[in-house]
Length: 464
Image (cartoon, rainbow, N blue to C red; front, side, top):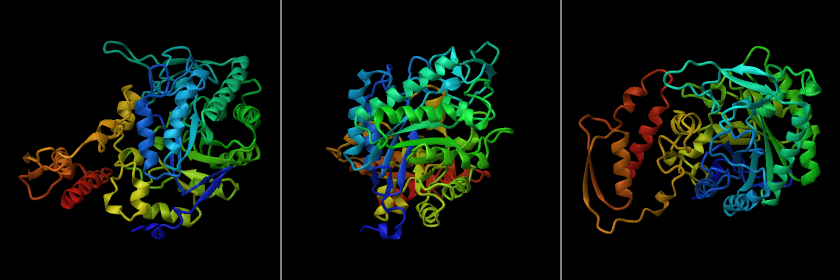
């Protein structure tokens, strides 16, 4: 039974530029770090994004595509769009998303001082030595070496002008590949964010100092993209509303930023938080409450007419319905939640709420493995994340009687998978309750979300 009537605001269409979105649920940009070594689209990229599009999102923003892979890639195997030979792969990626009715948008991001590649000669707004151990571009400290900090260099004015052209050329390639729109990553201390930030940007040329000068770089990128792609090609901007450092941008200036982007022709605003000096505000660890950033979209929506996306720690459909209904955001952005369960939108639409595997904000596969350990993205509670081989699981040719000893998360997941393919499973647990170590961990203050996973597994086992 279709229960979208229970969530009428979540499933109401909305227009972004010339794109009509079928609902208010957006996959906000995520660097899945699964591309080929040269930055071209891989089969894993295609499968991963298609799976999320199949799950029912209205728009999927592909994350962190570098406009200049030679000077900066945000992860060691992130996407690149700095040459025409990348267009065919990007076209396949766009089609893999659009075939399921989702709009495909490609985010352009130069990581600047936070580049994972190259390892040296990092580009920045200013010369400085930084220590950002939680960034994908962290200083590599070997076993018997001392931490010294990572030197970054100021871009010359000529390099800034060249980078504007590189962003616009990458946007032209994205459009040529068939993407419905492009997003500029201007958040989290990456290159465009670096220039916009009153805390980070200490330049004394026309790209630094005053608000007007700090905004000159992103506005020039927008104008150059419009020149190459046309004024009707939707441009979105993701930026940090609060940087959470003394002297950093706060809500008051971010409202001004929103108005400036709207006047420049931006089609929608994708609101985020923080720079890498304050990483908790973007990584949202377990103790962060659901929707803690709603204050930002609520305030900015009052200042602009273009749609606004909010995306922090959103997990529960009732809460998401409420913030859209109360006009606190136009669109709900999901990222890690769609790694844990790409079918969140369809499960909400068809009333399968108890079947939603809610992200527990553990940051294991999505940040620690992918961003810090330089591996492909994964999910601690969804082993199928990024793995096409799970799609090929066929019913057992000869159902077996299987005994699984231990009703913790590993035992329950093994039992669930075995039962799905047709085996007769008996699960043995010495205590009176399934859940294992999670049941103790979730008693720790701030770790309560871990119980969501135990509850989900128990529900699935009961249904099987």
